[in-house]
Image (cartoon, rainbow, N blue to C red; front, top):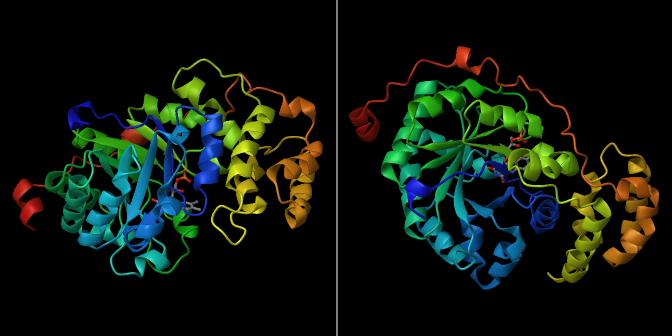
Length: 376
Ligand SMILES: Cc1cc2nc3c(=O)[nH]c(=O)nc-3n(C[C@H](O)[C@H](O)[C@H](O)COP(=O)(O)O)c2cc1C
């Protein structure tokens, strides 16, 4: 796809390790036909070393399109090889992780968010990734790392990466990362969100496309970001914790599609078929009913019967060996009125004014100069 025709997804579900696996993505796709889905991050080394076992890591059902593979790594050779191996799986975009602060990842040489300190390397990495795929490539990053958190440093990163590679799409998790040992969860909570940096990038790099991410919790807030000029919005935790309340409104409220009228009973009927077809597929009884049911546990968030359904699920995990028997045993906790209700017409409330003051807070235009940026 040529860069000039490239449009980033209006709405995407963020890559989340151990959350956005095949099971979650299957559920997400049953709820929203339009949301773009990102995989969990997959290390380039895993793809390269598991060459004989790639389906386990890379296969997905065609309904999951549009779907983006996120890879991580710090060795050009492995990134090139991993991208080439992944090509057979027809992902719609390849995304490179430059935002993960985990010690597990960050400790493995220069990997994840630490790469933001080496934009030249990221430019080279994106070049080799792009050279081994014919789909668009993108970078997911933070707005800074530790004390390297000025707007000019962020611009320098974007400038170098976009000049040294065909990258035209950046996903900006709008808070910096702290590499001082705080947990990944705290790194998604403690550093303050600075949406004004994201909007300043839109102003200063008009030829690039940017997706905003971080702390956006409802469709109302997604639309507020888009009204403010965002090219695309990525939502992580809210799409996982409240799938019905967020994904349920994406097609209608963001993409303007007519309501599908689908109910949770219908979704679970389809999910049951999927679940029973994958149980035990990886050997050693994995995935088991607990693995497959995990993303469903948030489907009835704040509905009557939710607490009882979770307790029943806990005990059903002990002995159920099929999704059919799991549902028979647990769904009695949920009233028919909940199971049979289509997605409600009104969009759940959210902070309409989340981006109201970003234009007042925007930093001055960046002054990355070409020679400085490319030859520093
Ligand atoms: C459990 C979990 C795992 C995550 N794993 C990844 C990952 O593999 N790659 C990545 O780029 N970001 C990862 N993230 C960060 C999210 O993609 C996203 O940037 C972050 O949660 C902020 O968005 P939110 O406020 O909408 O959740 C993860 C987040 C969570 C909660």
